[in-house]
Figure (spheres, helix red, strand yellow):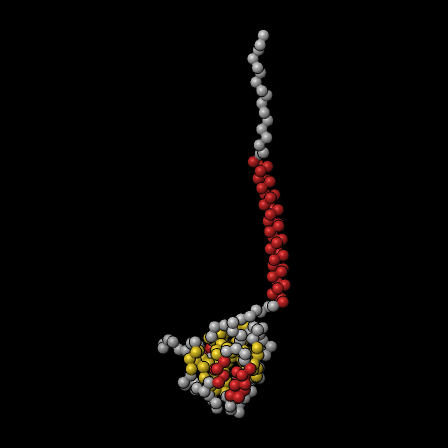
Length: 207
């Protein structure tokens, strides 16, 4: 007698539990995060090594007046005298002749060992050859430059707003071809006999 075929035994489910899947995902995520953090640490270390080899890269600034301007390694120092030094127009022209580009940085620093110019202006090299008074300055990119033998060399911002005076901290002035030094570095004035403040001129590369 042929009987009815018995049903197959129930199969055991092989699907992983949800908790097991979550645990596996967390382990994978942690492993990938650790690898990523290690790579980032290596990249940061390498970047620091490169920066230590060349802390200041090449620079080119727009013409204008700056406060607290960092001195870059690719600038060439042309002139560095204390404020009590009697600057001459011959010295300024000699500085211009030494500049290999058409751009100079004229400024003042309060400490000789500083890497910051308290106030400075970037302009064409020819500003060291000007022959114009402070009353009739030459405007170059919103900066009024003047150089008159027997009087003064320097710069100040243009006064575009007739109701507002130019900021005095952006003024600079050195007496030229007289028997005393001085005079202004931003808001600091009467620097005739000051040996701490420095008159600075750099030649800046152009690219």
